[in-house]
Amino acid sequence: MNPQHRFLLDQFQNTRPGRGQTTQRPEHLGTQRRWYGLKNEQRRRIMLDFIAANRDLPYEDWLALIDSLYKGESYEERCAPQTLLVKFPRYRRQLPLQQLEAWLGLLEGWAEVDSTCQTVFTAKDLLTSWEGWRDLLESLSGDDNINKQRAALVLLTAPIAQSADERILNLSLALIDRLKAEKDKRVAKAISWLLRKGIKQHRDAISDFLDSRADSLPAIALRETRKKLKTGKK
Image (cartoon, rainbow, N blue to C red; front, side, top):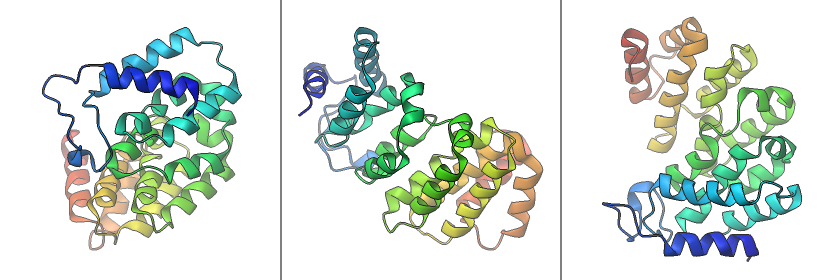
């Protein structure tokens, strides 16, 4: 195990579980992994303190630490890379996308997937290396692994709200078309999420898409997105 990983694991193990939390398996998070009962903010604070003490962490060590954490046995370890990815944007943009795809294959359940994919990678990240990201997202959406399918959609939820670039919109709608028949709630809810986030920059296009796919989109996506269009609320 990476020595910095060992240090962080000790922190997770020795932190008192958050109020109302339990150390039983977190089935509500979609995973069967060990759980130390930490709230997201507790885990994030541990990671921020580590980063504050290691601001000069070399890229190679950053990469090795994240790789080691993604192979950890607990939920907290698999979610910990989120903060390292967010707080080292220069390193994040150097990350080989093949490596990211491999890491996504190690995640289980909606919460682990979202920890890496939600509000971590930005529109700027995608547009700076558009062809690579397009190929990655198309690959994820076509994978048999339902967690990778969800990842393809969730990775776009921040960029589609941040940018009016039609490449992001068109790819998002294409992936939704590809996955809209999937019955698993992890995908159906991600479709709803992506459509609702798209309203900020692409309101008319999202509205037209709903009208043209009303008979084929998941009911939850159709219902929630129409509500968002009408009321501005989730």
